[in-house]
Structure formats: structure tokens, C-alpha cells
Amino acid sequence: MAVQINPSILSADFARLAEEAKAVEGADWLHVDVMDNHFVPNLTLGVPIVESLSRATDIPLDLHLMIENPDRWAPQYVEAGAGSVTFHAEAAAAPVRLAREIRAKGARAAMALKPATPIEQYEDILPELDMVLIMTVEPGFGGQAFLDIMLPKIRRTREMIAKHGLELWLQVDGGVSASTIERVAEAGADVFVAGSAVYGAPDPAAAVRSLREQAGAAIAAAPWACDHGAKA
Ligand code: DX5
Ligand code: ZN
Image: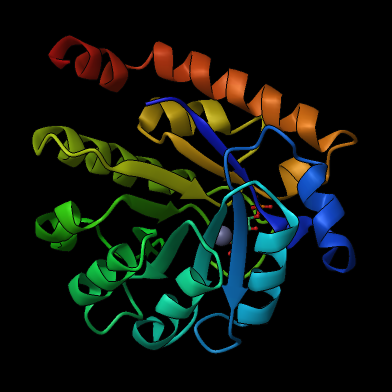
């Protein structure tokens, strides 16, 4: 699968979201972080802003729900216009039921894991998902340093996807930048969220293009991508 770069609007100017979406033209998805001040110690935005943003941009919205009780709220984000909805494994009461509900409403369903949550316990439910998000920082804030200790989990997740022959995207979020994207791609990620590395750059659209090139080259040279090609 081709590399996807998803700028996170957490690092954008919240008073100018429509313009900030235009500033990353060419991005695959716009990553929207919903925080409720309970699941994480920060508060961002909710359904009404997602509704407005989805009308204001053609870039599909990739919702990352860092909230308690996603079982109750996630379906509303599909109705608000999200093309993909990610809930946290640590917060969902019934992840299989929730993923099915998100898919039934017409969006892609994804599940996120905080750094200390292992992937192994979720191996059997991966076919219910369209994407897994491996957090490479503790969720809650942009601009944190990338956690290299997550690289083995990304590798194990990629192996699991290959073992079961799944069409599952592997997203990483947190500290992804020009200096870290190559090693995350080499480890097995194919969807990259970047907040400060995109919106902190003088030309955000150019930053997206350059991250895409770096990740593409790293994946082309990675053992996991070669294996995948050999099997195809
Ligand atoms: C953090 C959010 C991220 C955040 C990433 O909890 O989930 O999406 O915007 O920001 P950077 O790319 O600056 O680490
Ligand atoms: Zn996020």
C-alpha cells in the first residue's frame, strides 16, 4: 500500500481550520484529535467542529478519539462526516461491536494503543479493523519526543498483519518528523500522523511531500515491504 501522510490539526491554528486544511493540500487525510480531559489531560474539540470542518475541506477526516466511552460517542463522529474513526483499546468497552458499528455507518474503523498496551491481546480481533494506531508518545499533546521503545511493537504488529494476510493499515502518531519517519517506516508503519513537523514548517504542504518521499524510500528498502511484494 502507498504511504499516507496525515497532518494533525492539533498543531494548526484552531481559529483558522479551513485555511489550515488548505495549507496541507495533497495530504491523504486530516488527522483530528478529540480529547475529553478525562482519557487524556487535555481538551480539544467535539462533534460540531468536526461537522463544520468536513464541510470546509475535501480532505477526508481521520478522527482520533482520545475520550472515555467511545462506544457511545464514536458513531456520532461518523455522522459528523469522518471517513475514519479511531477509538482507544483502553477505553472501549466492546471494541468488536464498536468497530462493526463504525463500519456499518460507512467509515473505516480503527483502534489505537497507548505505549504500554501490548498488541498481542488484540491479535484475534484485527480482522474487525481497517487500521491499528500504535502511539509513539503518551497521548494528549503535540510536540513530544518520539518513543523509540515503540519500534519493536510496530515490528510485531507488521508481522501479525503479514501472518494473517490482512489488509490492515498501520498508523503511527507522536513525534513523527524528518528525523524519525524513516525508522518508523522501516519498522512497518504505512500511515504517518505528523502535527508539529507539518504545521511547524514554513511550508506545510512541502513538509507533507518531503515526509512522503522519505517514508516511501524507507519502505521500499524495508524487509517487510519486500516480503509483502514477494507474496503478492
Ligand atoms: C497526541 C496526538 C497527536 C499529535 C501529534 O496525543 O494524538 O496526533 O497531534 O503531534 P506531533 O506530531 O507534534 O507529535
Ligand atoms: Zn492523534
